[in-house]
Length: 242
Picture 1 (cartoon, helix red, strand yellow):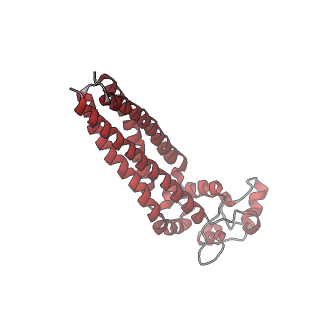
Picture 2 (cartoon, rainbow, N blue to C red):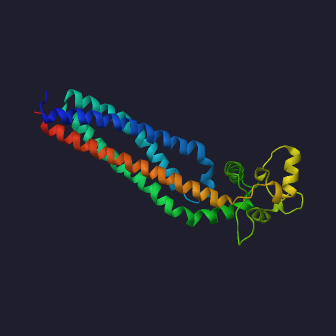
Picture 3 (spheres, one colour):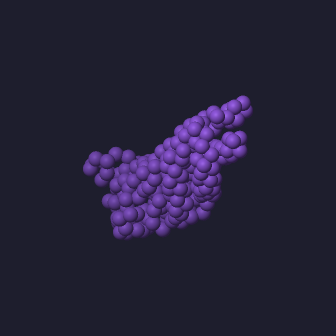
């Protein structure tokens, strides 16, 4: 059994692993929430870095959670081979989770370059492409928005680019309407200016994705820092065990 300062390192490593365990569960939960609850946005983003970074963090969260048990057991039992294995796996997870965090941060700065064009190009495909239709129908009620502003026009006007909304009785999709009963939808589609959402979907989605990507990136980098602490303590305890 180790004594003195080595004993402090031992219990510090145990505590660090408990924190890493909590962090791993948190990363997994945030990643699952991102993919499950916001997957409808992927088709309109024009970039898969958002989903990729979340997927990386989910996988890493699972591995880190499992490995933290190995670190706790190795610290308490003072098993050198387990501590060495723990250090190697933590180092690999550090690289992966850091990449996931950086991808989330990079995506935050890249999102504006492609998203507006991708959303604009998808407007004529509405009702002709099931994935695009489902994406818009989920997006507009969620953000309480309608279309995209182009050349200083109201955002609702962009739906004139779709052949399904060029008549006087249907000028916007049903998902633009504030109220969803049949009479209200009919009135809304004929006179969207007063009865449809008036927010710009691009602006709403851009702000959401950039803020959420910052959270993903921050969590990834935060967990990476925790892994560094775990690696340092496991290495120190490994060297102190006779």
